[in-house]
Length: 242
Image (cartoon, rainbow, N blue to C red; front, side, top):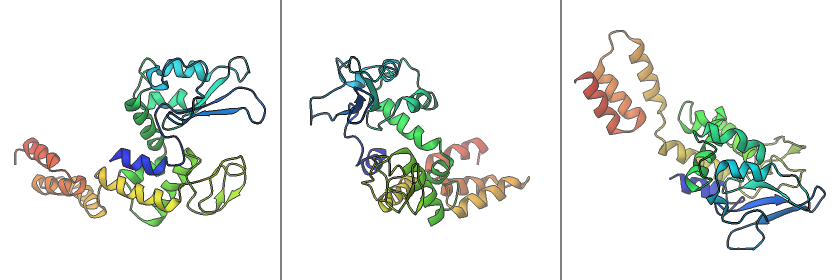
C-alpha cells in the first residue's frame, strides 16, 4: 500500500508526521531538528504536536524570520515539506489552509508532490511503457523531491555533477541513504497497485474506441484487463446494457 511505498522512499527522511526542522539563526550550525520520541528539541513556538495545527498556522510559522528571538519552522512532517513547497502543494492536493496538517492531509500532499511531475505521474499510472528508461526518469524526479533518495545515473545535480546513488543535492550538505534500485522497485510495485494500463490493453482500448462501430462487449473486457478492476467492467456493462 501507499504506507509501505513511502516507508521505503522516506527511510532517510523523517519518521513521524510531527517531525520537523527549524532555524534559529542565519549562519552555519543554525538548523535544529525534532524527531518525535527521540529528542526534546521542538520548534519553540509549537505548543502541541505539529499535526494538530492547521496548514495556515504551519505556513505562518514557516514565514517567521531566522532569528535567535523567534526562529523559523522549515522542513515539516513526514514528507519534510519546506515553506516554498507548502505554499503551492496543499492546493494541488485539494486542501484548504484551514485543514489540519494531520497524517491524512500530509499523505495527500506527499502524493501530490509526486503527481505534479509528469515522469512520475505517467509511470505510476501506467501511461507509458514499463521499461528501464521510464523507471529511471521517474526515479530521478523522486531524487529531486527528496534529497535522501539517490539518483539513478550520473547527472548534473543542483550543485555539481553527481554519481549514481548520490543525492541530487550533493555538494550542499545533503547525502543519499536510499539507493535508486529500491526506489525503482517501489515505483514499479506502486504502478501495479494503482492498476495502470498494460501496454497490450491500452493499445487495444484506443483502437476499439477509435472505431465508430466498436463492440461494447470487447471494450468492457479490455478495460477490465487494462484497469484490473472487475467493478469497472460491471459498471460499463450496466452502462452499455450488455
